[in-house]
Image (cartoon, helix red, strand yellow):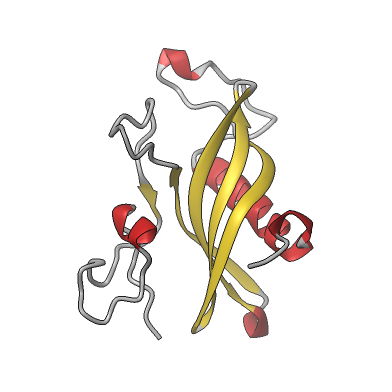
Length: 142
């Protein structure tokens, strides 16, 4: 997707992904938080979508690289959102910190998949990019 930084739809999907992650983990501005140094997760605050790709499936699947703040520190996350415009629905399928290719340390985070992949990224009909395969995301097929 070109012009990610100025694409309002893509930026709104990034905000949606962060809000859904917070909601699913019981995080919100009305709750008290402790720092992640205590082993508990603080609310993420959406900053912006850095990169985006989309794929037409039974809806539109967006692969987003999102910048968000946690405890006033900027962090980068990978997410997958499916939009079905005819149903007026959005669904967060995956949200996790961006992995440092040199490290397997996720800095206290664990991968968070909302659905299980039907088959892995090594399946012969898988259209996933190497980056998506490395995140063990569901294989995008058409």
